[in-house]
Length: 511
Image: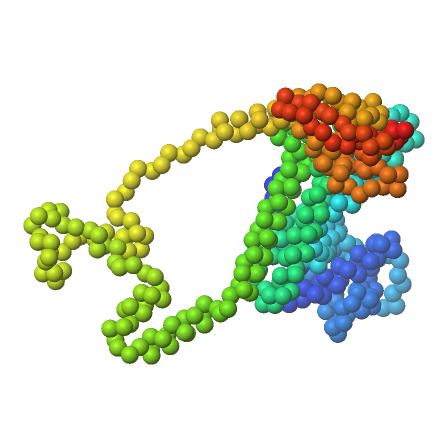
């Protein structure tokens, strides 16, 4: 995580004004020259290379020289004397002896503008491939950290750099996708058919991403734990050695490098390291996706309902206006208005005088005294009396109970998985008598397996949502029936051959 940093004075000033395109094209020329390892350019060289950047406006060499001096004043370029060229006259020396070099600030501001332009063209995405790449790079680091071979330090550095790149890509793409998603939720499309199809496709996209998110997150968390068991300081030390920093790098440069890597690793842990409340980054991502699915489905329902309407609100109002205009008598208008709108009489009619005995029940309104009416009664339907502000409800106890309940459910699930695990394929009838809670877990596993298609070997295989338990189910070879006893009754059904355990640990089909 990066904190607040003050911006340098006059940063990106070259992007303002009418000559900003020329300034950007000149910086483009120097960036291309740096890629060819050319460090300095003369005025005429810059002028000759401008068309190669895509800058097509006609410009004189004198304008280019003026622009170069302006960029030098902004500390984006640095001028120096050229001692390699030959000059025929003093005037030629005055004009051609200055060469320009891109400064560090110039490189940074040019790169910043390029990033802005690229970001404007990009769109966010929830890429499951990035999650798989993060897990793959963590597995590679675990393999490299098994021994202390100094020859592998460079690979440790490059692998760590790739891991950080994948994490940055995940964060950036997620933020951009969320922003685009919120804009989609607020959008009112002119083409309702296209708008409906886009939202429908987005719901399917989100649903497919969330479907296996927990499984991928669990895989990453396991790989992260294995790497941290071998020591993150040792990992960063080897990566620093493999980075091959130049001999001129000071202790402060090395300390900054170390701190930057440590901060990025903390960001990785914030996303994927398990805690009492789950994996923080994955949990937020899951919540955003689920809320977006609900909001999109509501928007789709509103669009569908609007299509079912025989007429619009504007058409209803026009019809009501025609009916009122065609009324036979003026006395019919109030009754027609009441039938159209369903509005009740004025709410203040229920109010009474402070002493009702002073007014006869049959007195006309025109003759009875006035009754004070609160100004807020018409707008809000409430009198002017102000009640006491409601107390803010303390939800700490509720949150604690929910957390305790979640932990208890997790412990119960772990216990069920441990007790239901089989040592290879076994008959369903072998479970015999079960507690009701274990029986419910077993039924859930059987239901997941039965919902999967039959494989070529005749088995059905299923994984739990967290990817920690695999069940392999085969039909009974002899048509036998299993009887499982529980405190609430007896369950009977086909005596399937089942194998329950960690993924990859299930045995061959029962013979």
